[in-house]
Image 1 (cartoon, one colour):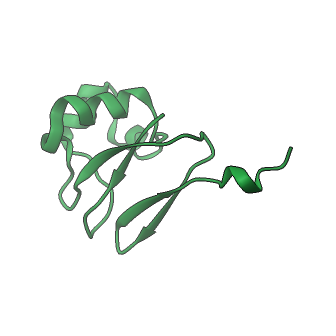
Image 2: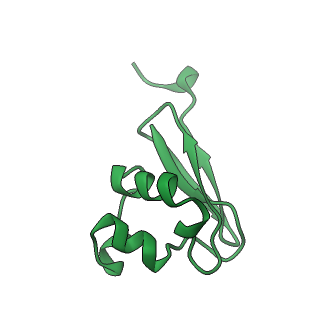
Image 3: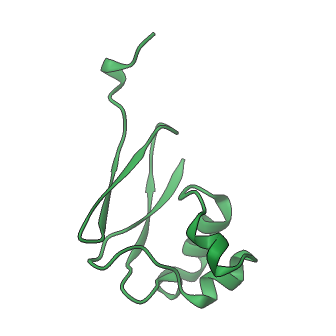
Length: 88
């Protein structure tokens, strides 16, 4: 599964062009899942033009839909559950 995260200080944000390309309002884009196909497609097709003012967006492949995005000073990282600790 592809997930969009921010790798720059300042926080996640989309450009106006990215929001328009997804066919949503800015308010709707704020609440999108980071694995939403429209968001992933916008970042893939627009590249750096999808970045908001302080953002550097990248796409990360994850194995689990139970990922967590952790953030420090706007820089985000993905955490996935360790399969060794999964309950059966």
